[in-house]
Length: 168
Image (cartoon, rainbow, N blue to C red):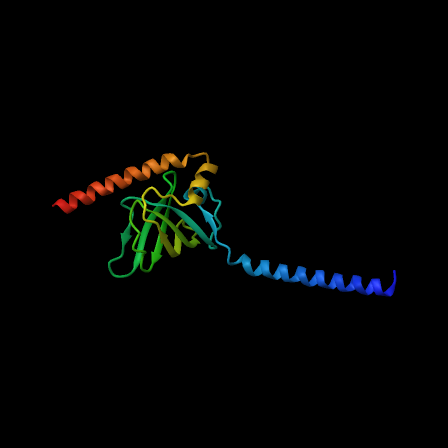
């Protein structure tokens, strides 16, 4: 091998080594910022890691919202109509947050089986199911259409209660 080829080989090997180190450091830095999505079925099955940032989603279970009158603490249950997971959140909830609505929370799963949420994101349509929840249900062998019908039933019942309350 000629000295000129050897020099080019060392330059190329050096550049590849630097690129590998840069990719490795980037992946290491991103590792702590990745929020994987888990449905209540997956959380109940033990697939979600404890005390790591995750996203969990589903529908807010009817009658499960419990607000502390002295603080901004709120507890509620997120369900995919198969399994439930309790969520605890301290802060102001989004305007669209209601029972029977789709939500995605970002937080940490605690050893007690509940999620300490840092962020709550809500959708306005009772027929909405987060895409991740629908896919997780399909993967678990459940049909999202069945749960959309259940969500529509909850929405109709809530609307009937709202109409009854407004007539009184």
